[in-house]
Amino acid sequence: MKKSIKIFFIILAIAFVVTNYMEQYKEQRVTDVIDGDTIKIGYASIRLIGINAPEKNEECYKESKELLQELVLYKKVMLEKDRQDTDDYGRLLRYVYVEDMLVNKEMVRLGMARFEEVGLNKKHSENILEAQEKAQNARRCIWV
Image (cartoon, rainbow, N blue to C red; front, side, top):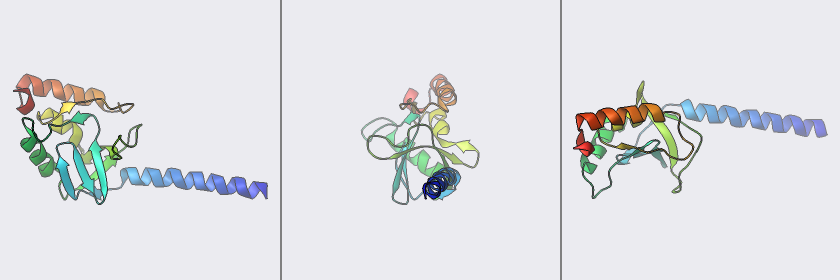
Protein backbone atom coordinates (compact mmCIF):
# COMPACT_ATOMS: atom_id res chain seq x y z
CA MET A 1 0.00 0.00 0.00
CA LYS A 2 2.78 2.47 0.90
CA LYS A 3 4.55 1.78 -2.40
CA SER A 4 1.43 2.69 -4.40
CA ILE A 5 1.14 5.99 -2.48
CA LYS A 6 4.76 6.84 -3.32
CA ILE A 7 4.15 6.03 -6.98
CA PHE A 8 1.02 8.20 -6.96
CA PHE A 9 2.95 11.20 -5.59
CA ILE A 10 5.78 10.67 -8.08
CA ILE A 11 3.29 10.65 -10.95
CA LEU A 12 1.59 13.74 -9.51
CA ALA A 13 4.95 15.56 -9.29
CA ILE A 14 5.84 14.62 -12.86
CA ALA A 15 2.43 15.83 -14.08
CA PHE A 16 2.97 19.15 -12.28
CA VAL A 17 6.40 19.67 -13.86
CA VAL A 18 5.17 18.77 -17.36
CA THR A 19 2.10 21.02 -17.05
CA ASN A 20 4.24 23.88 -15.76
CA TYR A 21 6.68 23.46 -18.67
CA MET A 22 3.88 23.33 -21.25
CA GLU A 23 2.17 26.45 -19.84
CA GLN A 24 5.41 28.37 -20.04
CA TYR A 25 6.13 27.61 -23.69
CA LYS A 26 2.61 27.44 -25.09
CA GLU A 27 1.68 30.24 -27.48
CA GLN A 28 -1.17 32.34 -26.17
CA ARG A 29 -3.11 35.22 -27.71
CA VAL A 30 -3.06 38.67 -26.09
CA THR A 31 -6.63 39.92 -25.57
CA ASP A 32 -5.97 43.37 -24.08
CA VAL A 33 -3.24 45.86 -23.25
CA ILE A 34 -3.78 47.63 -19.93
CA ASP A 35 -0.80 49.99 -20.10
CA GLY A 36 2.83 49.96 -21.21
CA ASP A 37 3.84 47.04 -18.99
CA THR A 38 0.68 44.99 -18.40
CA ILE A 39 -1.32 42.82 -20.80
CA LYS A 40 -4.18 40.36 -20.55
CA ILE A 41 -4.45 36.86 -21.89
CA GLY A 42 -8.00 35.76 -21.28
CA TYR A 43 -8.67 36.49 -17.63
CA ALA A 44 -4.99 36.47 -16.62
CA SER A 45 -3.12 39.73 -16.14
CA ILE A 46 0.53 39.57 -17.17
CA ARG A 47 3.07 42.09 -15.84
CA LEU A 48 6.16 42.29 -18.06
CA ILE A 49 9.21 41.47 -15.94
CA GLY A 50 12.10 43.89 -15.76
CA ILE A 51 10.36 47.02 -16.97
CA ASN A 52 8.31 49.89 -15.60
CA ALA A 53 6.31 51.96 -18.09
CA PRO A 54 4.89 55.44 -17.42
CA GLU A 55 1.61 55.71 -15.52
CA LYS A 56 -1.48 57.55 -16.88
CA ASN A 57 -0.41 60.98 -15.63
CA GLU A 58 3.24 60.69 -16.79
CA GLU A 59 5.07 61.63 -19.98
CA CYS A 60 5.02 58.97 -22.72
CA TYR A 61 2.16 56.98 -21.16
CA LYS A 62 0.05 57.08 -24.32
CA GLU A 63 3.00 56.29 -26.59
CA SER A 64 4.08 53.42 -24.36
CA LYS A 65 0.64 51.81 -24.29
CA GLU A 66 0.19 52.28 -28.04
CA LEU A 67 3.56 50.68 -28.79
CA LEU A 68 2.77 47.67 -26.60
CA GLN A 69 -0.57 47.34 -28.39
CA GLU A 70 1.21 47.43 -31.74
CA LEU A 71 3.70 44.79 -30.61
CA VAL A 72 1.35 42.27 -28.97
CA LEU A 73 -2.40 42.98 -29.17
CA TYR A 74 -4.29 40.00 -30.68
CA LYS A 75 -0.98 38.31 -31.48
CA LYS A 76 0.23 34.96 -30.27
CA VAL A 77 2.97 35.35 -27.68
CA MET A 78 5.18 33.02 -25.72
CA LEU A 79 5.48 33.59 -21.98
CA GLU A 80 8.64 32.85 -20.02
CA LYS A 81 8.73 32.58 -16.24
CA ASP A 82 11.58 33.59 -14.03
CA ARG A 83 11.94 32.81 -10.33
CA GLN A 84 8.99 34.79 -8.96
CA ASP A 85 5.58 33.77 -10.34
CA THR A 86 3.31 36.68 -9.34
CA ASP A 87 3.52 40.24 -8.06
CA ASP A 88 1.78 41.78 -5.04
CA TYR A 89 -1.35 42.39 -7.16
CA GLY A 90 -1.69 38.77 -8.28
CA ARG A 91 -0.50 39.45 -11.83
CA LEU A 92 1.66 36.80 -13.46
CA LEU A 93 5.25 37.99 -13.94
CA ARG A 94 6.53 36.98 -17.37
CA TYR A 95 8.91 37.77 -20.17
CA VAL A 96 6.84 38.12 -23.34
CA TYR A 97 8.04 37.06 -26.79
CA VAL A 98 6.56 37.70 -30.21
CA GLU A 99 8.44 35.25 -32.40
CA ASP A 100 12.07 35.80 -31.32
CA MET A 101 11.61 39.38 -30.05
CA LEU A 102 11.71 39.89 -26.27
CA VAL A 103 8.96 42.51 -25.92
CA ASN A 104 10.13 43.57 -22.45
CA LYS A 105 13.53 44.55 -23.88
CA GLU A 106 12.01 46.20 -26.97
CA MET A 107 9.84 48.49 -24.83
CA VAL A 108 12.94 49.68 -22.97
CA ARG A 109 15.08 49.92 -26.12
CA LEU A 110 12.55 52.27 -27.69
CA GLY A 111 12.40 54.47 -24.58
CA MET A 112 8.85 53.51 -23.64
CA ALA A 113 9.75 51.94 -20.29
CA ARG A 114 12.56 51.91 -17.74
CA PHE A 115 14.49 48.89 -16.58
CA GLU A 116 13.30 47.77 -13.16
CA GLU A 117 14.59 44.69 -11.41
CA VAL A 118 11.77 42.80 -9.74
CA GLY A 119 12.73 40.62 -6.80
CA LEU A 120 14.56 37.47 -7.81
CA ASN A 121 13.69 37.86 -11.50
CA LYS A 122 17.03 38.58 -13.14
CA LYS A 123 17.22 36.22 -16.12
CA HIS A 124 17.29 39.01 -18.74
CA SER A 125 18.37 41.95 -16.56
CA GLU A 126 21.67 42.58 -18.33
CA ASN A 127 20.05 42.63 -21.79
CA ILE A 128 17.26 44.97 -20.69
CA LEU A 129 19.67 47.28 -18.86
CA GLU A 130 21.87 47.44 -21.98
CA ALA A 131 18.78 48.40 -24.03
CA GLN A 132 18.03 51.18 -21.54
CA GLU A 133 21.51 52.64 -21.91
CA LYS A 134 20.99 52.79 -25.69
CA ALA A 135 17.59 54.47 -25.26
CA GLN A 136 19.07 57.02 -22.85
CA ASN A 137 21.92 57.82 -25.24
CA ALA A 138 19.46 58.22 -28.11
CA ARG A 139 17.18 60.34 -25.85
CA ARG A 140 14.11 58.31 -26.72
CA CYS A 141 10.66 59.26 -25.31
CA ILE A 142 11.04 58.99 -21.52
CA TRP A 143 14.71 59.97 -21.77
CA VAL A 144 14.12 63.33 -23.50
